[in-house]
Length: 486
Image 1 (cartoon, one colour):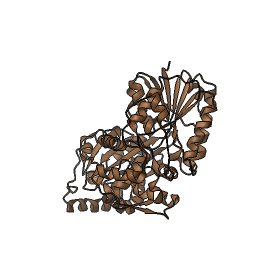
Image 2 (cartoon, rainbow, N blue to C red; image 1 turned 60 degrees about the vertical axis):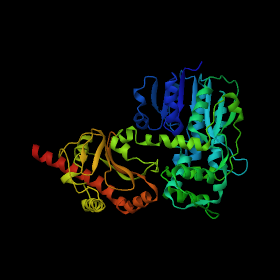
Image 3 (cartoon, one colour; image 1 turned 135 degrees about the horizontal axis):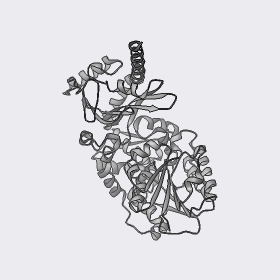
Image 4 (cartoon, rainbow, N blue to C red; image 1 turned 90 degrees about the vertical axis):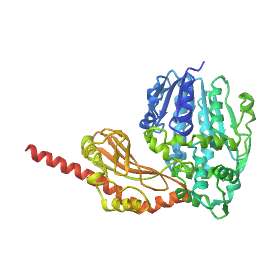
């Protein structure tokens, strides 16, 4: 009987949806991810039957201790976010975990892989296949589910297509935009994963998981456009190679670049699939692509109904269908020997008479631009000149998240095609501290992209200047304090 479940890759797309479902079903969960802070931000730490564990399978870890008492494992990790060497990283992680499984009492492993092309070769898809083979070397029964595009808010491949539909008046696409895939709704996939725990396999299994229809990427984008009220115009370009397409994606989509680039390899091929095996084992109504998209769009505001946006009502009210799910970003990180308290004291002075630490004339120009189109950015305001609290208005910004000595998030309040925030993050690294100042931007359509890239020249130096100026102010304040005490 399955009681304790280890979810490896809980911070990923599927894992972040699966963990709450497992917890609600009464299982004891060990949820792992490379970044413990990211797991904690999901609010899982307050759930009694979820234990959060930081785990990087490519560094030495106590896997024996982690696997102790575990009955079943969901293996959901991939290496696409690591860049060009993600294949080696992904397979190395699988080998480390497979070796640890041999010494464990785990009853079964459920691995989420990828559909395979019958003709052609993709490094990304091949790595997914090899990962399954490596896990099977452990000798523990492995159920490998092979999925194509998962339709749901935040799914990388789905968001790539949605960004193209929402952000471009004419979609310039590779000729393989006519390739077919068998997309599956997130809800259907989660149901399969949960129900598999009720079976006790004695051998390895490989099963495709699909929706009820095979559909080309071109048709998927046209259907997306129909739901968004857009007439999608697609121009296939034969000379748009995978490498050029990956570079093109960097500008158009807000999906993390490394993941988008890795996905390109798999999008080139027809990924035929047969989901009859698992459907006969676990019958359920499979949502059509149209139904899955409609359900997805109904939940997309969850991106601002979260800890990241502080559940702020102003952010939620301003979110619109068509905003990029994944944000563009620009920022700068600086190491310093200043204390967290010293950095925080300066961060809290942002706005008002103090301005923004660096290139204040650029901030003033932006405020006048807002005023010219009917905004009220020229109305400068701070409740307290030295301290901030949640909900404070700071000029045209609003404090939507605040953790003393660690983090400040400001909601962007000027008129612009999209939704953004400015964040100050302080991390204590023991021997030194890191201060990071970063802007995040969810573009609204083509105009939102143009706005972001219009701001790019300033972004190239303004955040670097802000971090250096802020640290310099900390040092000056420290010297001032010493001179007073002497």
